[in-house]
Image (cartoon, rainbow, N blue to C red; front, top):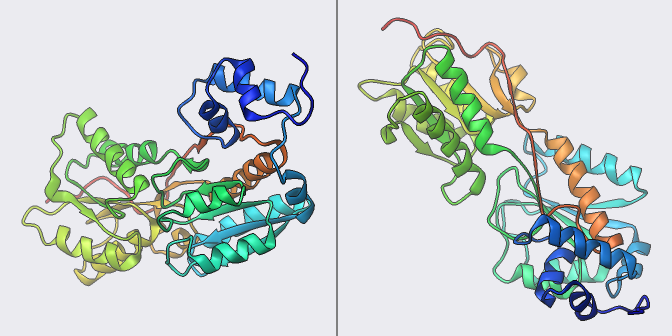
Length: 337
Protein backbone atom coordinates (compact mmCIF):
# COMPACT_ATOMS: atom_id res chain seq x y z
CA UNK A 1 0.00 0.00 0.00
CA UNK A 2 1.70 3.20 -1.17
CA UNK A 3 1.37 6.10 1.20
CA UNK A 4 2.81 9.58 0.82
CA UNK A 5 3.95 11.99 3.52
CA UNK A 6 0.36 13.12 4.11
CA UNK A 7 -0.39 9.81 5.82
CA UNK A 8 -3.12 9.96 8.44
CA UNK A 9 -3.27 8.33 11.85
CA UNK A 10 -6.16 6.21 10.61
CA UNK A 11 -4.06 4.83 7.75
CA UNK A 12 -1.19 3.98 10.09
CA UNK A 13 -3.67 2.25 12.40
CA UNK A 14 -5.06 0.21 9.49
CA UNK A 15 -1.61 -0.93 8.40
CA UNK A 16 -0.61 -1.82 11.96
CA UNK A 17 -3.90 -3.59 12.65
CA UNK A 18 -4.61 -1.47 15.74
CA UNK A 19 -7.07 1.23 16.72
CA UNK A 20 -6.60 4.94 16.08
CA UNK A 21 -6.36 5.68 19.85
CA UNK A 22 -3.48 3.19 20.06
CA UNK A 23 -1.52 5.09 17.40
CA UNK A 24 -2.37 8.34 19.16
CA UNK A 25 -0.95 6.97 22.41
CA UNK A 26 2.33 6.16 20.67
CA UNK A 27 2.48 9.63 19.10
CA UNK A 28 2.01 11.25 22.50
CA UNK A 29 4.31 8.89 24.38
CA UNK A 30 1.53 7.55 26.60
CA UNK A 31 1.46 4.31 28.52
CA UNK A 32 -0.81 1.27 28.11
CA UNK A 33 0.80 -0.28 25.03
CA UNK A 34 3.10 -3.30 24.81
CA UNK A 35 6.73 -2.56 23.85
CA UNK A 36 6.35 -4.72 20.71
CA UNK A 37 3.27 -2.83 19.49
CA UNK A 38 4.86 0.53 20.29
CA UNK A 39 8.01 -0.35 18.36
CA UNK A 40 5.99 -1.61 15.39
CA UNK A 41 3.88 1.57 15.21
CA UNK A 42 6.92 3.82 15.61
CA UNK A 43 8.59 1.97 12.74
CA UNK A 44 5.53 2.48 10.51
CA UNK A 45 5.34 6.18 11.41
CA UNK A 46 8.97 6.57 10.40
CA UNK A 47 8.70 4.47 7.23
CA UNK A 48 5.69 6.40 5.95
CA UNK A 49 7.00 9.82 6.93
CA UNK A 50 4.13 10.71 9.22
CA UNK A 51 4.32 14.29 10.49
CA UNK A 52 1.91 16.08 12.82
CA UNK A 53 0.19 19.17 11.51
CA UNK A 54 2.14 22.26 12.44
CA UNK A 55 5.25 20.33 13.48
CA UNK A 56 7.45 22.08 10.96
CA UNK A 57 6.33 25.52 12.11
CA UNK A 58 7.03 24.70 15.75
CA UNK A 59 10.50 23.48 14.89
CA UNK A 60 11.30 26.82 13.29
CA UNK A 61 10.43 28.71 16.48
CA UNK A 62 13.34 27.26 18.47
CA UNK A 63 11.66 27.75 21.87
CA UNK A 64 10.89 25.37 24.72
CA UNK A 65 8.73 26.51 27.64
CA UNK A 66 10.23 25.35 30.93
CA UNK A 67 7.70 25.79 33.74
CA UNK A 68 8.83 25.36 37.33
CA UNK A 69 7.12 25.88 40.68
CA UNK A 70 9.70 28.20 42.25
CA UNK A 71 12.93 29.70 40.96
CA UNK A 72 14.35 30.23 44.45
CA UNK A 73 14.02 26.66 45.73
CA UNK A 74 17.22 24.75 46.38
CA UNK A 75 16.43 22.14 43.72
CA UNK A 76 15.54 24.68 41.00
CA UNK A 77 19.15 25.40 40.07
CA UNK A 78 20.23 21.89 39.01
CA UNK A 79 17.00 21.51 37.02
CA UNK A 80 17.50 24.83 35.25
CA UNK A 81 21.17 24.10 34.64
CA UNK A 82 20.41 20.73 33.06
CA UNK A 83 17.60 22.14 30.92
CA UNK A 84 19.63 25.13 29.74
CA UNK A 85 22.69 23.02 28.87
CA UNK A 86 20.66 20.49 26.89
CA UNK A 87 18.66 23.20 25.10
CA UNK A 88 21.86 25.05 24.16
CA UNK A 89 23.30 21.83 22.80
CA UNK A 90 20.24 21.48 20.57
CA UNK A 91 20.29 25.14 19.50
CA UNK A 92 17.02 25.83 21.33
CA UNK A 93 16.15 28.72 23.66
CA UNK A 94 14.24 28.33 26.93
CA UNK A 95 11.35 30.44 28.17
CA UNK A 96 11.40 29.95 31.94
CA UNK A 97 8.21 30.52 33.94
CA UNK A 98 7.67 30.25 37.68
CA UNK A 99 4.20 29.28 38.88
CA UNK A 100 4.88 30.52 42.44
CA UNK A 101 3.13 27.43 43.76
CA UNK A 102 0.00 27.87 41.62
CA UNK A 103 -1.38 25.15 39.38
CA UNK A 104 -0.41 25.38 35.71
CA UNK A 105 -2.98 25.89 32.99
CA UNK A 106 -4.87 29.15 33.55
CA UNK A 107 -6.23 30.97 30.48
CA UNK A 108 -3.63 33.75 30.56
CA UNK A 109 -0.76 31.24 30.47
CA UNK A 110 -2.45 29.24 27.71
CA UNK A 111 -2.86 32.41 25.61
CA UNK A 112 0.82 33.27 26.07
CA UNK A 113 1.84 29.77 25.10
CA UNK A 114 -0.34 29.85 21.99
CA UNK A 115 1.10 33.22 20.93
CA UNK A 116 4.69 31.92 21.24
CA UNK A 117 3.94 28.69 19.36
CA UNK A 118 6.62 26.96 21.43
CA UNK A 119 8.08 23.72 20.15
CA UNK A 120 7.16 22.06 23.43
CA UNK A 121 6.58 22.44 27.16
CA UNK A 122 8.47 20.92 30.08
CA UNK A 123 6.52 21.07 33.34
CA UNK A 124 8.15 20.80 36.77
CA UNK A 125 4.97 21.16 38.80
CA UNK A 126 2.84 19.14 41.18
CA UNK A 127 -0.59 19.96 39.75
CA UNK A 128 -2.30 21.10 36.55
CA UNK A 129 -5.47 23.16 36.33
CA UNK A 130 -8.53 21.00 35.53
CA UNK A 131 -8.72 20.64 31.76
CA UNK A 132 -5.15 21.88 31.20
CA UNK A 133 -4.06 18.67 29.48
CA UNK A 134 -6.96 18.93 27.03
CA UNK A 135 -6.13 22.57 26.26
CA UNK A 136 -2.50 21.67 25.62
CA UNK A 137 -3.58 18.93 23.23
CA UNK A 138 -5.72 21.44 21.33
CA UNK A 139 -2.60 23.55 20.82
CA UNK A 140 -0.89 20.44 19.42
CA UNK A 141 2.06 21.24 21.69
CA UNK A 142 4.22 18.38 23.02
CA UNK A 143 4.39 18.27 26.83
CA UNK A 144 6.79 16.41 29.14
CA UNK A 145 6.58 16.30 32.91
CA UNK A 146 9.56 16.31 35.26
CA UNK A 147 8.30 15.11 38.58
CA UNK A 148 10.65 15.54 41.52
CA UNK A 149 7.41 16.26 43.40
CA UNK A 150 5.30 13.94 41.28
CA UNK A 151 1.79 13.98 39.93
CA UNK A 152 -0.72 11.50 38.56
CA UNK A 153 -0.94 12.03 34.79
CA UNK A 154 -0.54 10.26 31.48
CA UNK A 155 1.75 13.00 30.18
CA UNK A 156 5.18 11.59 29.18
CA UNK A 157 7.34 11.98 32.27
CA UNK A 158 10.88 11.86 33.57
CA UNK A 159 11.09 10.61 37.14
CA UNK A 160 13.42 8.82 39.53
CA UNK A 161 13.13 5.53 41.37
CA UNK A 162 11.44 6.98 44.44
CA UNK A 163 10.35 3.61 45.85
CA UNK A 164 13.87 2.23 45.56
CA UNK A 165 15.21 5.38 47.19
CA UNK A 166 12.90 5.00 50.18
CA UNK A 167 13.92 1.36 50.43
CA UNK A 168 17.65 2.17 50.30
CA UNK A 169 17.40 4.93 52.92
CA UNK A 170 15.58 2.67 55.36
CA UNK A 171 17.79 -0.34 54.69
CA UNK A 172 20.83 1.82 55.44
CA UNK A 173 19.39 2.73 58.83
CA UNK A 174 18.43 -0.89 59.49
CA UNK A 175 21.98 -2.00 58.65
CA UNK A 176 23.26 0.30 61.39
CA UNK A 177 21.01 -1.41 63.93
CA UNK A 178 18.05 0.99 64.03
CA UNK A 179 14.68 -0.70 64.42
CA UNK A 180 12.54 2.25 65.47
CA UNK A 181 12.69 4.51 62.43
CA UNK A 182 10.43 7.49 61.86
CA UNK A 183 9.55 8.82 58.42
CA UNK A 184 8.45 12.25 57.19
CA UNK A 185 7.30 12.46 53.59
CA UNK A 186 5.47 14.87 51.29
CA UNK A 187 1.75 15.41 50.64
CA UNK A 188 -0.26 12.20 50.64
CA UNK A 189 -1.74 12.92 47.20
CA UNK A 190 1.69 13.29 45.57
CA UNK A 191 2.93 10.14 43.88
CA UNK A 192 6.61 10.39 44.76
CA UNK A 193 5.79 10.97 48.44
CA UNK A 194 3.72 7.80 48.51
CA UNK A 195 6.43 5.88 46.67
CA UNK A 196 9.11 6.90 49.17
CA UNK A 197 6.86 5.94 52.05
CA UNK A 198 6.08 2.58 50.41
CA UNK A 199 9.81 1.94 50.00
CA UNK A 200 10.31 2.67 53.71
CA UNK A 201 7.53 0.24 54.62
CA UNK A 202 8.90 -2.45 52.31
CA UNK A 203 12.33 -2.26 53.92
CA UNK A 204 10.84 -2.70 57.39
CA UNK A 205 8.73 -5.64 56.23
CA UNK A 206 11.74 -7.31 54.61
CA UNK A 207 13.62 -6.95 57.88
CA UNK A 208 10.76 -8.58 59.81
CA UNK A 209 9.83 -5.35 61.59
CA UNK A 210 6.14 -4.48 61.85
CA UNK A 211 5.18 -1.17 60.26
CA UNK A 212 4.20 1.28 63.00
CA UNK A 213 1.99 3.99 61.52
CA UNK A 214 2.51 6.17 64.61
CA UNK A 215 6.03 6.78 63.25
CA UNK A 216 4.76 8.09 59.89
CA UNK A 217 4.10 11.73 59.08
CA UNK A 218 3.07 13.59 55.92
CA UNK A 219 4.31 17.11 55.21
CA UNK A 220 5.07 19.53 52.38
CA UNK A 221 8.70 18.64 51.54
CA UNK A 222 9.67 21.97 53.13
CA UNK A 223 11.80 22.55 56.23
CA UNK A 224 8.94 23.74 58.43
CA UNK A 225 7.01 20.51 57.89
CA UNK A 226 10.10 18.49 58.75
CA UNK A 227 10.51 20.44 61.96
CA UNK A 228 6.84 20.04 62.91
CA UNK A 229 6.84 16.32 62.17
CA UNK A 230 10.06 15.79 64.10
CA UNK A 231 8.54 17.62 67.09
CA UNK A 232 5.72 15.07 67.13
CA UNK A 233 7.94 12.04 66.57
CA UNK A 234 10.55 13.04 69.14
CA UNK A 235 7.83 13.71 71.72
CA UNK A 236 6.66 10.09 71.60
CA UNK A 237 7.26 8.10 74.82
CA UNK A 238 9.37 5.67 72.80
CA UNK A 239 10.87 8.05 70.29
CA UNK A 240 12.58 6.90 67.10
CA UNK A 241 16.35 6.58 67.01
CA UNK A 242 16.40 7.55 63.34
CA UNK A 243 14.27 9.56 60.93
CA UNK A 244 14.06 9.24 57.14
CA UNK A 245 13.01 12.58 55.68
CA UNK A 246 11.35 12.71 52.25
CA UNK A 247 13.46 15.69 51.19
CA UNK A 248 16.69 17.36 52.27
CA UNK A 249 14.71 20.45 53.25
CA UNK A 250 12.57 18.34 55.58
CA UNK A 251 15.77 16.83 56.96
CA UNK A 252 16.99 20.37 57.74
CA UNK A 253 13.80 20.85 59.73
CA UNK A 254 14.50 17.62 61.62
CA UNK A 255 17.96 18.97 62.45
CA UNK A 256 16.42 22.16 63.86
CA UNK A 257 14.02 20.26 66.12
CA UNK A 258 16.80 17.92 67.28
CA UNK A 259 18.92 20.93 68.27
CA UNK A 260 15.99 22.44 70.13
CA UNK A 261 15.74 19.23 72.16
CA UNK A 262 19.52 19.12 72.69
CA UNK A 263 19.81 15.88 70.73
CA UNK A 264 23.07 15.21 68.95
CA UNK A 265 23.09 13.98 65.34
CA UNK A 266 24.00 11.17 64.82
CA UNK A 267 24.77 10.14 68.40
CA UNK A 268 21.18 10.55 69.62
CA UNK A 269 19.35 10.61 66.29
CA UNK A 270 20.34 9.46 62.82
CA UNK A 271 18.85 11.35 59.84
CA UNK A 272 18.63 10.50 56.13
CA UNK A 273 17.29 12.94 53.52
CA UNK A 274 16.25 12.72 49.89
CA UNK A 275 17.40 14.77 46.84
CA UNK A 276 21.11 15.47 47.45
CA UNK A 277 20.92 19.23 47.01
CA UNK A 278 23.52 21.73 48.13
CA UNK A 279 22.34 22.05 51.75
CA UNK A 280 23.50 18.48 52.40
CA UNK A 281 27.06 19.83 52.57
CA UNK A 282 26.03 22.90 54.56
CA UNK A 283 24.31 21.06 57.38
CA UNK A 284 26.40 20.02 60.34
CA UNK A 285 26.94 17.14 60.44
CA UNK A 286 26.75 16.73 56.66
CA UNK A 287 23.61 14.90 55.59
CA UNK A 288 23.39 11.31 54.41
CA UNK A 289 20.79 11.32 51.65
CA UNK A 290 19.30 9.68 48.58
CA UNK A 291 20.51 11.31 45.39
CA UNK A 292 18.07 11.86 42.55
CA UNK A 293 19.87 13.18 39.44
CA UNK A 294 17.82 16.31 38.86
CA UNK A 295 20.14 17.86 36.29
CA UNK A 296 19.97 14.65 34.26
CA UNK A 297 16.16 14.58 34.67
CA UNK A 298 15.91 18.03 33.09
CA UNK A 299 18.27 17.06 30.29
CA UNK A 300 16.21 13.97 29.53
CA UNK A 301 13.01 16.03 29.57
CA UNK A 302 14.40 18.45 26.98
CA UNK A 303 15.54 15.57 24.77
CA UNK A 304 12.12 13.91 25.07
CA UNK A 305 10.07 17.01 24.27
CA UNK A 306 12.28 17.73 21.27
CA UNK A 307 11.79 14.16 20.04
CA UNK A 308 8.03 14.67 20.34
CA UNK A 309 8.21 17.97 18.47
CA UNK A 310 10.54 16.82 15.71
CA UNK A 311 9.66 13.17 15.25
CA UNK A 312 6.14 12.96 16.64
CA UNK A 313 7.00 10.23 19.16
CA UNK A 314 8.65 9.94 22.57
CA UNK A 315 11.28 7.21 23.04
CA UNK A 316 9.44 6.03 26.16
CA UNK A 317 6.22 7.22 27.88
CA UNK A 318 7.94 7.25 31.27
CA UNK A 319 11.62 7.28 32.16
CA UNK A 320 12.79 6.51 35.70
CA UNK A 321 16.39 7.42 36.48
CA UNK A 322 18.19 5.59 39.26
CA UNK A 323 18.51 6.99 42.77
CA UNK A 324 21.51 6.20 44.97
CA UNK A 325 22.53 6.43 48.62
CA UNK A 326 25.12 9.10 49.46
CA UNK A 327 26.67 8.42 52.85
CA UNK A 328 27.90 11.35 54.90
CA UNK A 329 28.01 12.06 58.65
CA UNK A 330 24.38 12.11 59.85
CA UNK A 331 23.93 8.38 60.46
CA UNK A 332 25.48 6.02 63.01
CA UNK A 333 24.47 2.98 65.07
CA UNK A 334 21.89 3.81 67.76
CA UNK A 335 23.24 4.69 71.18
CA UNK A 336 22.14 2.55 74.12
CA UNK A 337 19.04 4.03 75.73
